[in-house]
Length: 157
Image (cartoon, rainbow, N blue to C red):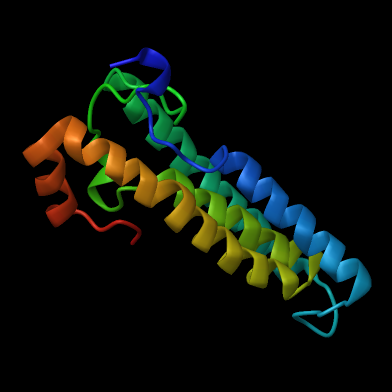
């Protein structure tokens, strides 16, 4: 198989999709404010920070597990192995869940419903434009081992 083509045919880098959704929400908020709360406060900031910390921990652990298993977290590189330990026992896509948490955190930071809307958009983009395409790449590559993993671990949560 051509090394350049030995990867999932995803629509865009997942972090870029997250950043684009955050930017879109800020743009929408500029033209049509939709506040979540009547006034800002430390609780909102605390919730946002908490979600970002949880997301950072998930990303750190997930990336560490991938590297330990000899595969690279970059979806533009070939997948060398299926990671089934640590956070991958609970979700097949923990890093993407972390991206969703970051966008949700911005809803609290910016006090805007638009970030929840774009979080839904990000979920759809990740699900159909990244995850399903990665699954189509991984299933033939790892066969029964991957199908068994899919039966044991949920796609999201």
